[in-house]
Image: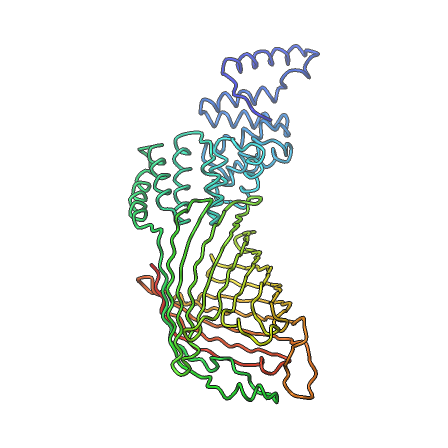
Length: 527
């Protein structure tokens, strides 16, 4: 029911005509306004003149005559809102909503009444119904955008706030003001400053103008400091009790030979990553990066690792039924040397997507293709032991988030298939992943990650086990990793962390069965 504005002159004419018809008992009464409608029209006239007490008396008299008069209920609610009594407006508007569930005017004003009382859980479904059916209705974009901002769904908030059709200067200022807050929360200080300047232009003199100007100054400083170039560094000191992952124990002669090698060492790890972000908008982000990792094992230097990695990614942010949705495509090339000799190079392509169901639930789907080239294996005697391969992986993960991501629980599953050149390395794999983070007092972050990788190799192993009487078998592995870390953010973008890794590999081929413990202390810095 779309309510048109009625001029005072036409209202007076209706009142005179209706009064005559009531007195004369005209037979055409069903086709003209009822006596209750006459009081509604009187009330509307008083409402337009801001005579709210007289308007309420007229609407209440209309409701005494016809308790189900939707217009009388609607304008009663509107009058209470004009008198700054939103709690009193709810009851008549709820009754009108029950009588006319498809009336958008009623739904909108009831939503405004709840919104004004900060009862956002009641206001949101009403405003969403209105914006779905009439997206250009004045101010509905602001109301929905503000509620999305409160839930930290900044991209959705920005979309609604920018599409808002303001009814007056106040809403013309509020919409870009909260759009600026959303952009600032997304790390887009430069764009946020443009929105805040628009808010100031919309109403140069208002209670909001002073805070908006101070916010603009803060954003100006942040915009100058906003960098497209980032650096991450890390320095760690560690103890590793099984650097070459020697087997634990067994009767296979190959195990006895492997266990003779030195396997314990202290060491240092250095890491640096450079990233350049040439594109960053509310919808798109592109980044390119390079990183270098170097490990130094003090007692077993021939297991020192150096890894060079180049990467690029493109991210698209959108909405799926008003839920934040992110799609990404990443490419990575890394080259690793072992003891200063070529070891492996890998090309990895990884498309993926994330969906934020609510403030608590986030789901991810992951795909990955990886091509591996073990460069030192070109002169193998047996091609069955060639590890050059293509690996295909698909996985799902879900996060339960609490207190604005200060705490979370995650769990997931991955399937991967390794198509290796050598039959000894060809497998089907299943991986279970889980983890949690808890933010403790003093802002200490305690994190635990777990994964279990089951690998079933598709061909009989060509030479293991090595015992003369042992028959050939299909290799089957279970690799289990537990990682516990305690970290603390410090001033100047520094973070200190203590980490413990426990790895346990179970295999029906004893040479691949091992245990490993690594303890490390690290300091990280971000620019």
